[in-house]
Length: 406
Image (tube, rainbow, N blue to C red; front, side, top):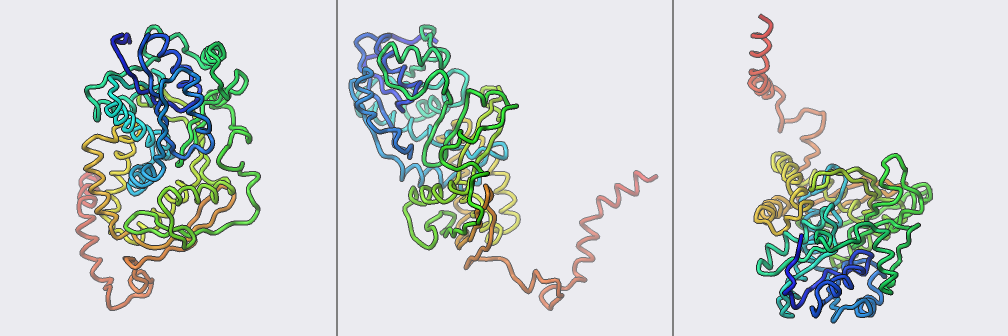
């Protein structure tokens, strides 16, 4: 994918990880005279951004901008996805997928503010992230050039081993080595692990793989209970303490992590057509998803709940495919927001050896009526009413059976 060489200024999505660490000097080498601005988003990576400005400048950046987006990430990205119940292929809670549109959004804003004419990313030509970044660029900055080095014929660093050697040649400090070569992506919502021994699905994830959580075998032998309060589908408090959106997730990550909650190992279908294997940790998100599903079961009318479950599948695809700024996602959000307006209450959860189970759920908007649900027949429910209802409901099945029996 050859690139135009008349680019004057580029804004690079910069994490300080292996890929973007080598791409920064590569851009300077292959676009002579071009200025490169490294943009780093604080999304809850822990200490990964420590010293990132110094590292970016030392690697060739003309400027490094770091923006704390944790609250916006939680409030405007993670929580809408949570309300929708979006989970890709039953298991993946979309931690990397949901972060990319936010990073790309601020890349575009930075490019427009700094007078840049191009944006760039370090995603490979085999993965999903290239799509997520570039679709956001197209939606929010259609006039900007897109530079994707992995799809440039001049880019020769097509393996992580080659990238490590290049980084050493350029004097770029990196944490990876040829022996320890997991590809990790971390933010407030999760951490992903790919590569190395995980590339073979026959290999069980090792205990030393996990970062945000303890191995289940080493989790406490006694359960811990936690409560989460919701207002209209948004989590607002943990153990009775009101918290900002990102603090809710941080707190539950800590609690869930010490019990080995939220660890998954799956082979997923990438958007580009291949299958890939990864291990994920989403402790806080797993607690929140279990909690909101329990509260929905109490507060949402049957047909709306069932339809929302169908919407969740499409919503997850849109997020996974990088179509966050697609009008369909925005339309689905309007439905989800309305459908969850009565999802208010408190959920008590039990955490034990990697599992989250619901211990209790209460809501002022509960549709559960004890008298109606009881096995005891009362005046509010006449069993005889079911006779005609069942006859009509079963009529097509009865006629089908009668015809086929002949």
